[in-house]
Amino acid sequence: MLRLEATRQILDQAEQRAIVANLGPTSDELWHAGHRDRNFYTYGSMGLCSSIALGMALSTQEQVISLDGDGSLLMNLGTIATIGREQPKNLIVVVWDNEQWAQTGNQSSHTAYGTDLDQVARSCGIDNTTVVDNLEELKSVFGKALMEDGPWFIVAKIQEGENLPVAPVEPEFTLYRFRASFKDESCTT
Amino acid sequence: MAWTEKIIQALKNWDTSLIAYVPDISIHQVTSLIESDPFFHLVSATREEEAIGIAVGSYAVGKNAAVFMQSSGFGNSVNALASLCIPARTPIPMFVNLRGGPGEFNIAQVPMGRTTRPIMDLLGLVHFTLEDEYKMDTLVDGALKLCHANRQPVAICLTQMLHGGKLA
Image (cartoon, rainbow over all chains, first blue to last red):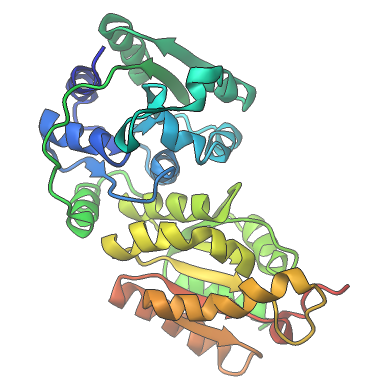
């Protein structure tokens, strides 16, 4: 499955839930799939996508979705352990796993050589983990994750599509637009 | 009021309840109080840049957050600050135990400890250093006010002269 069509699938099911996107094409494709206030695009800080989503999940009652990547998550495997330790029920991590660093020349990542992120998550105490490689499975498991307590960790095997135009690079606007959408809602402070 | 209590009070004054940190024996004097206080949610990160990411996420949904780390961990945090907090203008107070000063026993802690504040200067980050408790409550409270007014991280560096440090 292509990441863009998988992103459209997630966006369709997510309704108004917050989505944090890994840097590069994951953020670009989310923007093209459907720009909205509750998309939190990232532009740097590689490896921190799911850490940011974890911080959100710990500070709101609402469900939070992280769209991470295999190469990025490999930079910060420790955050899987922190998610396992904190056990946020409202966090869903989706890892787009293309088994490569596509943006730097398609070098194979460690998941192409046997690193099993699903098992990493499981060994960190995240019980709801799964691996999917087609849209129907993704739709089904993501729908289940939206209905049942997490944390969820879904590894989605994807293929690269064509590079889309880079989405607007607006970190400050992204943060404060996103934040405004949480004002006077479920936050306790 | 002990120096540790002054930090706790300032965090409460600024409604800063999510604290992400990597353990350190000197800042343990503060983080142990935070852990036992139901006002706070103390999150143990595996690495300091992860703590920065968690804090930014908390702020993004409307809950103020701060981080605690040692100066060695500040070295681990530079890219998170440079490519996330600063361009997104995120007000994250950072309490940094500054190694490498008077009383330091470990040569391996000196280079990062001595370059922490120059790196903050190069990043354009405001920082204050506490050598003692003189006007500390005013300074820490004011630092948090500045942090939010400027919408950028601010560092409060804690030294061995203040907290007694780690003894060899």
